[in-house]
Image (cartoon, rainbow, N blue to C red; front, side, top):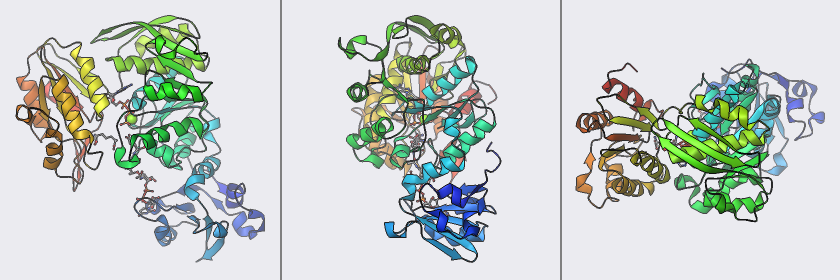
Length: 506
Ligand SMILES: CC(=O)N[C@H]1[C@@H](OP(=O)(O)OP(=O)(O)OC[C@H]2O[C@@H](n3ccc(=O)[nH]c3=O)[C@H](O)[C@@H]2O)O[C@H](CO)[C@@H](O)[C@@H]1O[C@H](C)C(=O)N[C@@H](C)C(=O)N[C@H](CCC(=O)O)C(=O)O
Ligand SMILES: Nc1ncnc2c1ncn2[C@@H]1O[C@H](COP(=O)(O)OP(=O)(O)OP(=O)(O)O)[C@@H](O)[C@H]1O
Ligand SMILES: N[C@H](CCC[C@H](N)C(=O)O)C(=O)O
Ligand SMILES: [Mg+2]
């Protein structure tokens, strides 16, 4: 999907940040055709960017990068005195740059000719809803005439041809590279998920967004941020230390509501207008009525742009919030209520997000990505409204992630579901039994929960024992078509498992 390489001279690339005029002509005019942060991906004539990472120091791979064909290296400088130093080694140039991680977004964006200025770029951050809202934005944009791309958890690319990616928010080079490729493919709109890790690591520091959405903040990634205050600060910096464009804030969320005072040009989105108070002067969009069914939602809203009504085939009250945030963003960008509401029924559920599988003689199975306490609670509450029989919850917790959430999620499942089956998610380097033990600590009656480590067996058991009017929530993996074990990653998909059990080919 990535575009043909982009050629630029080292002098031009780095002149905003160091005096390249006194360099030797040959290095100032030396062209590089691609830049990469990983020596294992180096090709001839590449620029290797050697950063000091979390696990290892990339500078240790400079010899490997040169051996692989790199003709220039941009490396983290030991101290400010060495910023701009140039060293020639085996006919290769090594240029030292201080605080490279913090400037890499700007350098890479310059390398790829500022693709963020060549399409409408939107950011979505928050604990839950990023994938859902970014894909709803791209779907809605396509329906009103744009050619939209997305970047996020389910991959990067034009909306209907995503290429899987390692991260929800890629590294500072990958992002402008992908955006450059999207522009090459005719994209004029792109919605991207911005993770808190991505914000803290400066992965999008130099990018110019036309609008930025905040979804919500609840427990997640405390293994990385340490506590909720740091996690909140990480999210807020998108609106205070980046080029966020129009802030679109979910003010149903207490953190979002508290930020409005600091963001006077924000668009506030609420399901209860009273939350904004009589004195709120800013732009807003609010729900006035809603009806739910397993086929979708019927929404009536009012806003600074007028009132309207639309239906969309998404399940759950949290998806009302997601739809209103996407709608408010497109209204704030100048699109009309009539045009947006007319096409809304053609929006579709996002892969692995409250994705409903239903056959006449079988229980309804809903595959969802909920892997945080808040998400699991919201998903179970959404399904309870429609459940005539028993509500089943099949879920596990990922290994090498926040351990504190494990008993919390178990407690939520016991409180909101009728039948619980605890299974494996992505154990990674942790023992599955240890993860399950952490989860069982949260149950009042652990003996009433079933533990079936094999996820396919867990799903099979539930479908074979549930009644036709039961609902089974299969949570935590959503779109994932893999399972990460200690020593290997195997192919596994909840969606394919359900389709096979329902007698359908995947
Ligand atoms: C902790 C973390 O965020 N790490 C990210 C970071 O890696 P790093 O810089 O720490 O890498 P490192 O392993 O220390 O290596 C240092 C440098 O040496 C280079 N290297 C390394 C080995 C080698 O042989 N040659 C070589 O050149 C590496 O390319 C790197 O530039 O930069 C990498 C891209 O350059 C990311 O892929 C990597 O994400 C890892 C895989 C990760 O799991 N990150 C998670 C925490 C994350 O970012 N998650 C969020 C949210 C997920 C969600 O909830 O949706 C996300 O946005 O994905
Ligand atoms: N607005 C919301 N509020 C709370 N929970 C939500 C919301 N939207 C989705 N969810 C729940 O969270 C799960 C993840 O949704 P989604 O993938 O859109 O979030 P995300 O922010 O992209 O997550 P991640 O950070 O893991 O990529 C969904 O499967 C659903 O259970
Ligand atoms: N992509 C995210 C969420 C994974 C969700 C769940 N499947 C898990 O493994 O915890 C991460 O790597 O943290
Ligand atoms: Mg996501």
